Image (cartoon, rainbow, N blue to C red; front, side, top):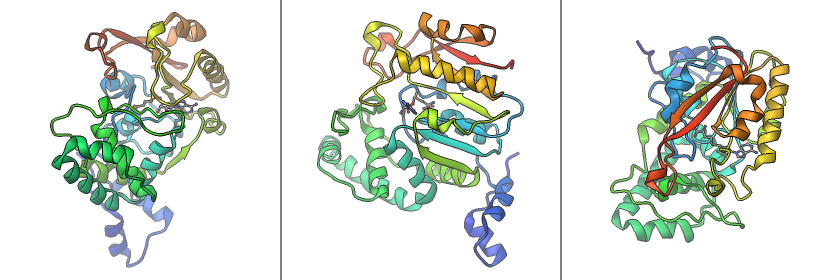
Length: 314
Ligand SMILES: C[S@@+](CC[C@H](N)C(=O)[O-])C[C@H]1O[C@@H](n2cnc3c(N)ncnc32)[C@H](O)[C@@H]1O
């Protein structure tokens, strides 16, 4: 059975005044955080392998770190499906994405109004509005920027995020019949989840984000994939990608986190290079089948294997 929803307003009216930080957390067990799922489509999103990841969640941990946050499928799974409560450190190098998480956390009502407006305009003339929003409209506030970011994410080609050398988003329009630009329920639920789950949300390189990780913290690492073939090397996450040297640095940090007695779970594509990098943990490697959604060739959307690598038994 799920718990009852008590919003900020409920808490306020019960006490007659604005609740303190600790009071809000005192009520966090009363907040219904079910039905939260990623509010953006994201390359490498983990929604389809959640059941496999679920079986590898440590039974006990202290704090949660997700430094390659993307759409945050794992975080939402932990707090929503698993109904777990913990202090979370969520971060990603993509500032537009992280700004969106902050706006959903702090200004979800205004965001929903703006998204409804984008949805109405888009439905009047999808292609005209898509390119106007992408190329002409210059949002000023973080709320405007986030509304544009989400509207483009829901209507662009395969939810891809790609910017040119000047940092300008340049993905063409996708082919959707009725894209749900404003998913008010999910956004409202996520706003609650982020407020009540003690989530610290930051733009950060993963190395900096993990400096404070300690014994018994649970860290989920989902870096950009190592390419499975020389032609599949487009990561689409940022203009400079995540190359072999980055994968190597990450593997070194994995060992360091293991030495610090953190519980670390990492996902990556199944390539000889990745298997070699994590060969010291070969007893804790699981293979899972995945279908890559973001690929222009339908024939290449299935049949990929991914590795789940941890430093603990599950
Ligand atoms: C595979 S995606 C994560 C997908 C996510 N698990 C989900 O469910 O949607 C990898 C993420 O790493 C981020 N990223 C790339 N390089 C990074 C870095 N050096 N530090 C932190 N994040 C980085 C990208 O912006 C992208 O969001």
